[in-house]
Image (cartoon, rainbow, N blue to C red; front, side, top):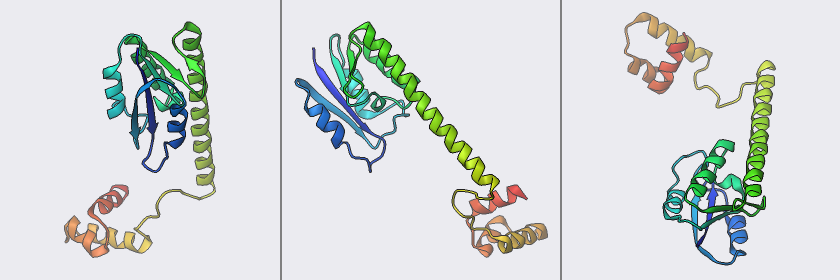
Length: 186
C-alpha cells in the first residue's frame, strides 16, 4: 500500500502552499503529484494522469479538498470512481472523507452534491446580476472599438462595393476580424 497526494491550482497565480502544508502533516506520503495552473474541468491533467496510472490495489490518494480533483459533482464522482476502480481509496483532509468504507463514499456523494449546488447558485446569481445590469443599460465586457462614426464609415464603404474587406479594415483602423463581426450585425 502506498499513499499519494494530489495538489491542483486552477491558475498559475494561485498559491498551492495551503495544500502543501496540509499534505506535509500526513505521514507516509510516497509522492506528491501537482498540477498547478490547470483547470479542474479538464479531463486530462498531466500529474493527475500519472497518479492514476501508478495506482494499485490498496493505495490511497489524499487531497486537501475534494474539489481539487474535479470542478463539479460529476467530475468529482468520476475521479473517485476511477480511483476506487483501481482498488485504491480516496481521502479528503478538509471534508474528512475517506472512501475506504461505505459511509465515506456516501458522504462524498452528499458533499459533492452540495458543492455543485453552491456553484450552480453562484452562477445563477451572476446571470441574474448581469441581466439586471443589462436592463439598466450597463453592458459588461470590453468596450467596442467601433463607435458610431466608424460604424457609419463601414456601412458606406461596404455599400459602395469599391473596397475589399481588408482595405476597409485598414481604412477604418480595426482588425479584419472586428470588421467581419460588425458586418455580420448589419
